[in-house]
Amino acid sequence: MKQAVLLLAHGAPERLEDIEPYLSLVRGGRALAAHIVEEIRQRYALIGGSSPLLARTREQAEALDRKLAEEGCPVKVYLGMRNWRPFIREALVEIRTDGVDRIVAICLAPQYSRMSVGLYFRRTQEAKQELGVRAEIAWTKSFHSHPLLVEAFAERLKPLLPCPTVLFTAHSLPERILEKGDPYDTEARATAKAVAERCGLADWDFAYQSQGMTEESWLGPTVESRIDQYARDGIRDVVLAPIGFVCDHVEILYDVDVLFRSYATERGVRLQRTESLNASTKFIATLAAVARERLLTP
Image 1 (cartoon, rainbow, N blue to C red):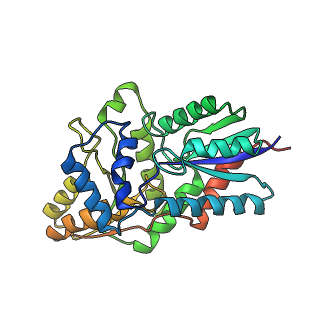
Image 2: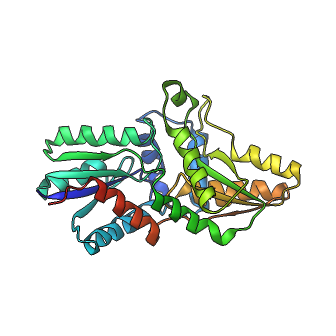
Image 3: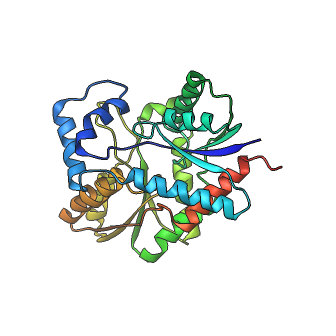
């Protein structure tokens, strides 16, 4: 039986000219107001005109491929993006051509939500059916509490300790996900708690970042509201640790490094953040362990 690993990621524009078609894909063809498109274009301009997400994710895929081979489990690692090239469909075409019989699918988002990870899985299944791919898919639903993931995040946090306040963050989602018992909020907070315990933190905080530009309510508290409270309490040093993200992209390089840092500075608070996992040795070991749990042994 020929097996493979498929890493699934969000995708991001590689040029400013890609912003509008990218946003159209993110929103399923629904238009955004011109001023919002321009705001997003400016954000990418401030981080160099493109997102490093594809480059960082390719590095993760290549490192995972090497790691599995080193561990005696030589299977090819493919990469598919939901909202940009290489699309999930393109990865499945390659998988079909290569004659793969069984795919272990891992979404590069540690915490599960039907709205996020669940959507990646649905898009993968739709492409599989459309293309007539016969390979069986073993889904990796969540790895939010995997000991190696916790260690990987802790490894990034420890160099910035001690610090008066550590603020863990995850990407916000609409509040309506909670109405049907979606596990995302529970899992995001559980990851934060596990990393805090691994680092010996008696006191820490949690917030959601990168709320969408829509009128509906999104999960909070917001990072800005927590910074406001720190300023009122006289806290002058804060470390922000994004435990819902596994590589550099606009939500890190703009939302944290530009927006939140400026917001904090204006209120007399110095904001530092942990380095992203990217292709760190511990994170690649995490992915390898997660993959091996689903791969069939001879």
